[in-house]
Length: 252
Image (cartoon, rainbow, N blue to C red; front, side):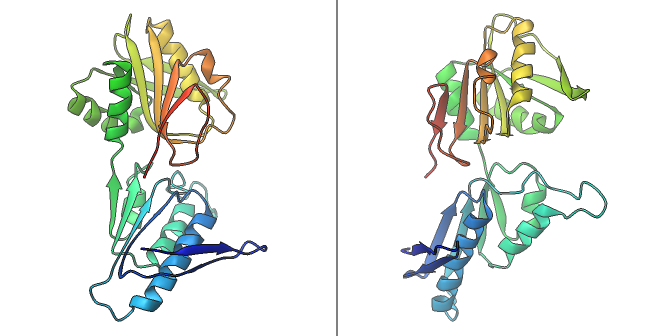
């Protein structure tokens, strides 16, 4: 597949030079501009392949925008993920792959969708550290982390958090004394909750605390996180990070 994206000064994007009858578009998908660029590629491809019954179009989204807005949080508010997924569905892809979605709602709302597992990235971090205890940061992450722990034959410690006056209070349900720990989660916005979790793990005697997240935003930088976390592992699904504190796995 060959295509060219052009962006005009007013922000408009356009695609041209679509040549193949099989396409696989891969995008970060973390912005509306990404989605519109994808849509222009698909529209130009459709124009050339409308009558080709053998034509196949696939889409890979590395970091789906709006994935945390997986319900209508308050009355009279928009259901943002539904809006985004309806837009993707309108492109009529034969297959849509999504890397480590925040919840199964994304897969339910997007037609012909399939999850890309984050297992291989966690495994790479796990091997680099050297057999750490896996830590699920909350109840929502426990199922996925438990499945990974079983595949890696690793110990797993659940944790739970509740917010009191905006500050998370954390309970850790297992022995981590003298052992390295790897917190595993899907995404980090600012990452402050992970700082408190790492602090609690070290208070329980953990020798080192590492963090893996697939989607690494870290909108407030790393200085505060460095106080309690020894290293961060992530993919570049959201952005490229150049910091010695971070080991980033590069997606194709």
